[in-house]
Amino acid sequence: MSTFNPCKGKTACRDDGERCLTCGRSFAEIEQTRNLIDALSEFALAQGYDNVDVFAAYVADKVEKKVRHRREENTA
Image (cartoon, rainbow, N blue to C red):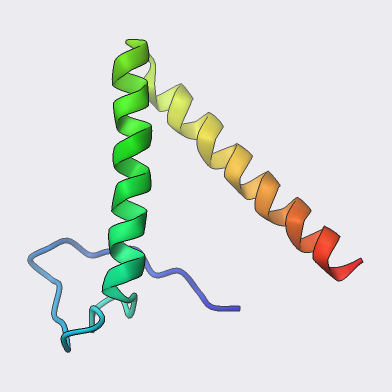
């Protein structure tokens, strides 16, 4: 397993052509993460949610639970 290191912002990003030297993530990983965040943002906007903070917390909680559950399934 690896450790997730969040982006420090585009102004802090330094790269070697394949990955960010600041957070250590590959450009492919960064792009996929951005696409997922963009899709969730578009969904929340389309739904017209006033309480985006509650939606974001719900999604974060569900992702954490799903990952934990799938890891347990894979070790069983």
